[in-house]
Length: 279
Ligand code: FE
Ligand code: FE
Ligand code: ZN
Image 1 (cartoon, rainbow, N blue to C red):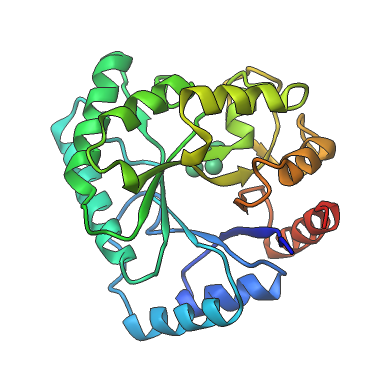
Image 2 (image 1 turned 135 degrees about the horizontal axis):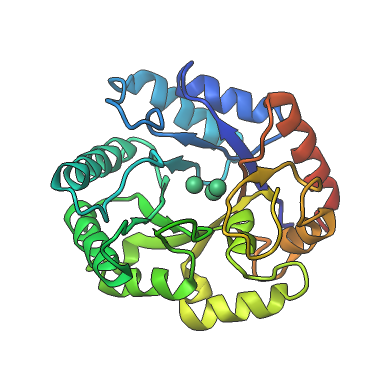
């Protein structure tokens, strides 16, 4: 029997083991967390006992792979050496720390080219990733599909495909699809989910798709805005999520909620989505 793998974005501030227990308590069997605060400051020293306790707990409770999200302020595509250097330092440090969590996924926003143009931005991202991704790591690095706000790279499947094409260790790279982002970025997953997935498959390859961010959107199709809404309360609507979680090409993937909720709201959304998942 296939079980839905679903979780929400949680905070690591009370430790890793605590986060695992909190996930289970809201009916989740995976979760996402920020590797450090979104401003990207120095991460706390790792408490390996705490992490190992979490690892045992996750295994005992049949959790899916957990997703670590990089600070969204990193910009490996910046023209400023200091900003790019900082992004490299944080990514390398995150990847080495994540080796303590078996088979973790590490999600990145690719970056913004600012005024340099998409081609230069993509080249800088490729260079950065090739510096931090190591052949021996167990963590899989995921590029997130973006809304294409401002000069953000990754709002088109082609841009992610070009980045992946330049990566040396291709077995360490995948994609995380964010439903709010791609709808805001002009992929019509309400009326043409099959077509969007076919497009993804022909440009990137569905075998690269390793996680889904489940978010409704506050804005209309093609708005390029990136404002998340609660499941069923935005422009995507509940039926779209029902189709996504049950889609034969998606239903085996881990789903992560990044909706504007406190913990109780996440509990309700998880139970709602579980009830819509076909056995
Ligand atoms: Fe993100
Ligand atoms: Fe996301
Ligand atoms: Zn977003």
